[in-house]
Image 1 (tube, rainbow, N blue to C red):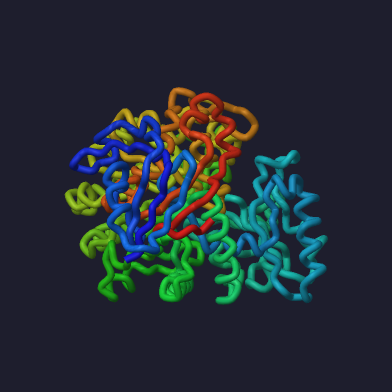
Image 2: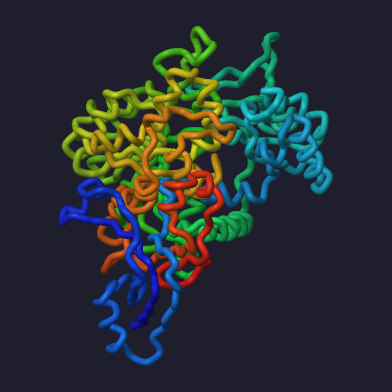
Length: 548
């Protein structure tokens, strides 16, 4: 057995009741006085006096790390991310607004990549957001043709729900001017009826964009792990765990090369180029919980809509400035009812992507009609992003024990586009964490990386300040405290993963997943919340082993 001691550590206090429900006790109020934490074989053995008592009873060779009075948090849980897509984005052309702040700058970045590859080779990029560009426009087919006449180009919007393509990409994909919009998707056209190059939602399926090679997948994921550990993230939920990703996770777990825990969700119903995996999972006898402490299957992912800033998320009232644009629902409700029933009967939990209020309504309608509501109430079903719920939706979340897997990081990064899409009155209702807490709804925080940056402190900052990157405040009444916001990424996130017995707190039996800070993050957030954006852990440990 390997025993470790972390001395002079101020441990985050997280009161718990015998039931272990994250909302059964108030959020953490602060940190202990400097004390000792003992870990054995990757789990916390004891803290405080009990940990000190162990120091005299362990064999020679036990390690001791003096933290000098530093503040220790449990490792953060990224509740909704796409780690392999994030890794791939680190290899692709970076066209985020902070790097390429105009259409001209985007085209220049594409031209630089074209100059380094062979004619006919695909050029891929990610991160553009027309709402953050001064011209308010996206790169069109004509823009990209001018710099890449001989290379297929596909640039993924920051949300991941749209492509900007050039003529070569359309030609290789067999897309012509007479292409018809598929159900749940759209090829955007200009006033003259000609294709602009913008491809939305399930129309992306028609684009022959290549998948990354095994070598590139592993190379990108290695870079992604570096970023996660530097942010203090020790567990990552992969909300579209492809077969290639699952094979890679299995290989890396066997070889000991994983530096974060993975919690994969398999794509249930085919959409946007992702294959349906529900029947295959059932045929293989899989159910939620299969795996080990490093890689453990969570369940099935369903995608009901698109993005709010890109105006593809369905809303009950038209988008701001429009008379009839309500967004896009990607699936027929009857299809969802059958699939939800099948998933429940197989013991596979559901994570349901629903951003717009109309999509959230569809999710609840389908769950109710599935005939499996008792199972739903017992198995921590999740609404992913949960961006724009109504008061009735929040009440049903509480009644049915549905978890709000809230992309609160969108406030900082995408909040301005939400304000443009919804207008000043409706935008005050987005990501309503104070309402969730008051209603007794378990809510967790996430970034949807690479849709936004994966640093949890940016999500915590958004939950505390409700402030966008340009300074707009979106619904100040929905703000929560720093301690409550940290809870979204620790205890409540562990509960959402059905791991409250092993993660999310610094207590005996929990994973020795630790992150260490020189300053008290709670005090810092309460006095100077903008300073949260600059926070970074001094060191990070996974199962007691330093990984950053």
